[in-house]
Structures are given as C-alpha cells and as structure tokens.
Image (cartoon, rainbow, N blue to C red; front, side, top):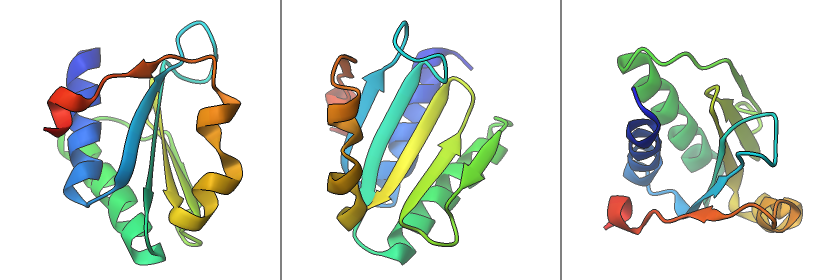
Length: 117
C-alpha cells in the first residue's frame, strides 16, 4: 500500500465513525516518530473507542500492522501507531488541552478536502 492509499484509508475510517475536526500533519523531516500525524476527536468515550476500533479493523482487513494502541480503555486520548502514520484520537475535552496542532505548528497540514468531500 502506498502513502496516498494509506492516508485515504485512515481518513475514511475515522470519518466513517464521525470523527470531528480531522486534520493531518506532514511530519517528514520534523519528527523521527512518523511521517504523518492524523489528529481528530470524538464527543464521547464511546465514540473515541469506536473510531479507534474502526482503525484497528480496517488495518487488519488490509493487513497493516498496528504497532501499538494506547489509551483505549480510558478513551481520552487514543494513540494508534501504524508505523509511518500515528493517529491521535482525542476526546473533545482533551484535544484543546494537549493542542498538538500548536505543538507541531511548524509541520505543514495535508489537504484532506478531496478525501472528505
């Protein structure tokens, strides 16, 4: 699976579970952790878990290895490590507190409009 296909797969998976304010940061040359960070949020613990579970199911279906998933039980900030992409699924209340968009403000945003339209 190439980079663009992975981006589309992940964005569509979180969008299918009605994740809000979906954004992606291009972390190449900025972070050694991953090439992309996808950041989104859900409005309840159950929705956060549903988004994370959908990511896990879609990855398994496409035989993409999820290296690590953390925070699922608490559902306040679930981190899904997919290798080249790390997905951050926040609870609405936690997203503004951690404000990863500002923390990584030097990373350019990836235009997701075509995928989400």
